[in-house]
Image 1: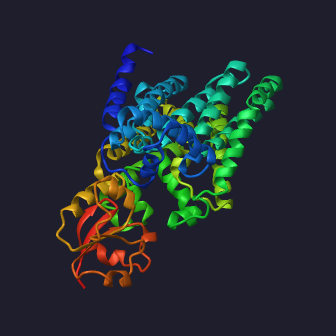
Image 2: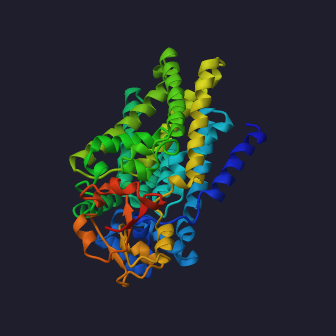
Image 3: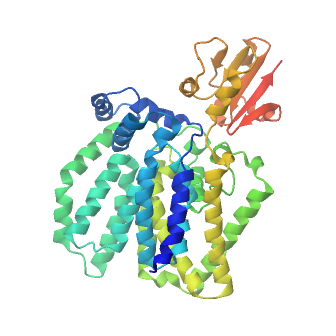
Length: 474
């Protein structure tokens, strides 16, 4: 590649690193991170992780990294999230190597660098940017390196161990390795000695990690779904597909999608979604017309991805576990490899419609990522804005939904009788207070037992992402 081909990826990478982490409000899961690492000695943190109590048990390595990072930079929103910049840099380097291996044009880097799923979790103090980074390394080793070499196998298993310690859901990725082993066996190139000896070397740490996670799962809060997407596995799978194909920044925000507020879809949302779908339609036509399923690399990558994702979904359905797109974010690089190979074929065809389809897919995915990064509509619950609003209100009583610890983080004195938390919005709860009430309501359905939220949505006096503020005078 020419040196000039590095310019575009470098510029995009710098823009992403500069703008993707900001001081927008933390949300419930980030408060768990804050509670886990805040005001603890390193020994106390390890004790919490090892005892498998609390959030630390399911993602131990991430919390160790986060603890060390916050010791240096503090506990502000940016401070807790900025560790993701390190992981993003590694992710960019590995993604660039993947692009070179697929021989795709350098500007295909936007599929990785401006991917909406990646950018959404860049601005979150949780392990998912780290998980994507590790997943990209694992995917690169799996599909572009010689799996019969001791060096590659050792690196692959070491990365798998690191990823598994980062988040328990990463363990599903080993299924892609098994698919690759089957392929090598079928063509007579699988070397049992090398694979079994390296796997045996990692047997003890694997058993220890598995035992720890079985202990964690026995008391996990994610067992037994809560809310629409928790109990409806079809909706959970649909949401994963929604984000993986690049729709995250084109349609409803994550908050509105989880609350099933389809009424918030605008004509702009619909137009953007249709543009992307039209691009994917032309991609599918090109795939069928040129019989790309005969490409062995594409076929192996596809079946590896499908096997891993399929088993992940089946296991979570069987155990009635809540699952989201973030739990399989490590599979994104494999999907983007498939896209790169097919889109490159469309561009190389030099034909009008395939090239148009490729441009539509690439441009709309990039636009989706830019909206995630810059459009406040796609940010998380705005506790920060709500806290500033209610602290200056003249209402006698303020009913709050959400997480009291986050309100405290943003300076609300929850010991003040003016502020009252309500888990479910109901008529009875609203009677027992002063006549001048300010309601801070969440769009999450599980907080609205009597279906009052839709009735009050139109009467709102302010809206902060998934929260609305209603002046209630019966």
